[in-house]
Image (cartoon, rainbow, N blue to C red; front, top):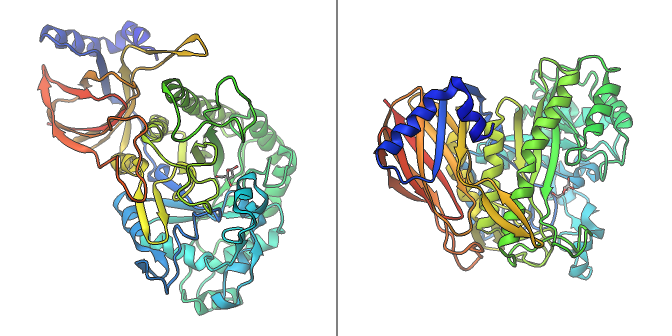
Length: 551
Ligand code: AHR
């Protein structure tokens, strides 16, 4: 709702009153946030704060997996620093093994004795980004040292649920049944349960989340939505559950393709309401390309640069990122045509900015890129969208965790860095499992110029959630140069104290390398109350968490 419309609403007149009272206290605020405690949206699923790891470039090898005999500190071969950091941000779920890789992967290659596992060609071997390796085999040929056991170990160590993406393009449905059996069948019950036990895991993994293909409109098979619906049925009907509450995730649209969603659900059950109890989620992938303006639309050459950008690129990335809100509401609308009770949730399991190659910390890191304050702001805005739509978004996964697009970590051999995105996930972790409440953010719009034409962006963005007497408001000031003096009013509650944790940097391009940290952890500060409202100055290009204690 627009601020003007909002003020017109008689039901909300009390909030307007709060602000007029604020002004009588000689307020100089130029931005306002109103939290409506009596308008709950829904519980924020912790799984909205999920991650994604694919066998791609440096994500698994040189990233998550260093091997048990490595000098790099590890727990059972898994890089220790990543595990510790994931625990700190309460990582709820991790998706694996792809991405496009998933539809070329035979899960059997990655189980059993590690020295007997086959070497295979990696899906990404012919990606344009792979050309710079000049045939160097690293990362282009899969050793299978990291398979299902190692992934589940990584999840357990990090405190996350595993989310496996099954191969629907190049393996038959029986292999899906068998993978579920390997993971979930009771100890001693089957040959595959024995194989699992021989690998060190006698007890079932109890894997709940199963992606049924990935991008089935593209690398996952180039299916039509109708063909995919038929495949989905073949893969998912009568799969034994072994007592685990299986939750399937269907391969949803590219961006906001409504016809893919409509075509799938129409075919799935002849247009009748969805019947598949296990259909937990409908995946959505949306990347932000920051296409170079006025140059080319070619998605490889035309993509923006992770480090070399101007103020227009800065705003344009956010503009494109905010499309996520439209996608969530549009896709939700189409789901409602088939699933009136909205049992199926949206699973945004790939999102983030995707830039052209050239800023990766090591040449073997295909699709690797640097992560600046710009990406932190973009990530925060995206997470705020998910929070605001807590009734619709059941899970999400940032693409990808390490040494890849929109990463939280950069690693190479024994070197390790956290990116500004890590701090965003750290700040936002308080929202997990809390009640999302409606909040209005109003500030003068930001005006900028796009190819000589005027353009504008909302002046503030954010979300709010409540857990008993604690209210957390996360807010982004996307202005490249102006701080925002902001007042936060809480309707339906009384504020007793407040503090802020603010992530900011003096340079929009600030980022961390493996040798140098430019973006340090958010700074905490106590806030003053002004006429019952919280007063805070939000620096330019910042991401903040305001914690408000209610009496
Ligand atoms: O995240 C990189 C790739 O982007 C994934 O493998 C694929 O699903 C998407 O196109």
